[in-house]
Length: 324
Ligand code: UDP
Ligand code: MG
Image 1 (spheres, protein in one colour):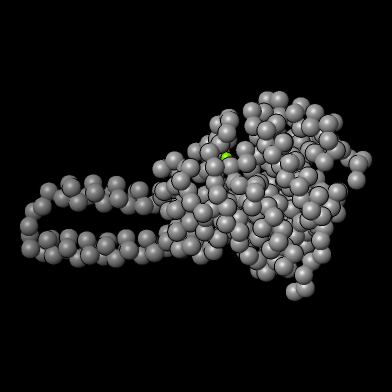
Image 2 (image 1 turned 45 degrees about the horizontal axis):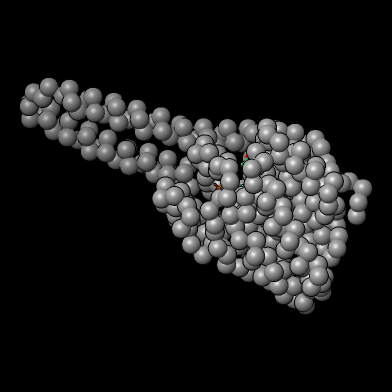
């Protein structure tokens, strides 16, 4: 793969959901780095810092509009409602590619991921990689719960047959070509972290440092985290359904053993009250069945959602349409 030429037309994509507290300072930090990179002729003047307002309910959009008024390198799109982090970055990346950029880098609006690693990403891109993953060098800033759950999750995903790049968050660079390929996956349950390695383009990694959030609180509620985890599992693996079959098989074997034991008892004329055996069996079988139906239902439900083929998002507002 030949080296790509400098300067690069870069779009930074920052998803924002109720981020009014950090947005201003994050914007300044990114712009400072941008200035520096433009001066060094690493990136083109036409590069942009794109905010994706994921249906915020606070003053986020007003801040984005004001930033755009002050400096045209800031621009923003606003989704018509809160669609979640994954859809927000997806929308931003596609918008950026439609505007003819060479590559996009996604980073959280709270800049917990170290923006100073950006030149490394660009370097790897120039070396010919279509995908550059940001890998966190430690999880020291995460609380114990998040740290442990994330580790278990990555292990579980691997077991289920989805090769995620471990400890990689959504801080990554994608070439325009990779973004176009990503959008050719038509599933509405979009699990970007799984799909990116799946595409198979040449990739590399960059290590970065994670910081504490400067202001505001985490917008990733437990519910959103669980949904993301479940989306990942169900969109990449039908192993849980196979487990149901295995479970059924095991329970079947146990029931045969029980049958034989009962028959022997019967023939030996041992009058067992039998109450406990019965009760345990009923509860056990009942729960196994409910669990199995639940797992299958989860897949059926998702098939239903996919069958509808609904649009993923709508953009309700755009700043800076005309300046390029
Ligand atoms: N985010 C979003 N939509 C959501 C939730 C979060 O666009 O529904 C954005 C949020 O504004 C931030 C990024 O996703 O830029 C990561 O969220 P956050 O920092 O709250 O998560 P954490 O760092 O705690 O995992
Ligand atoms: Mg954060």
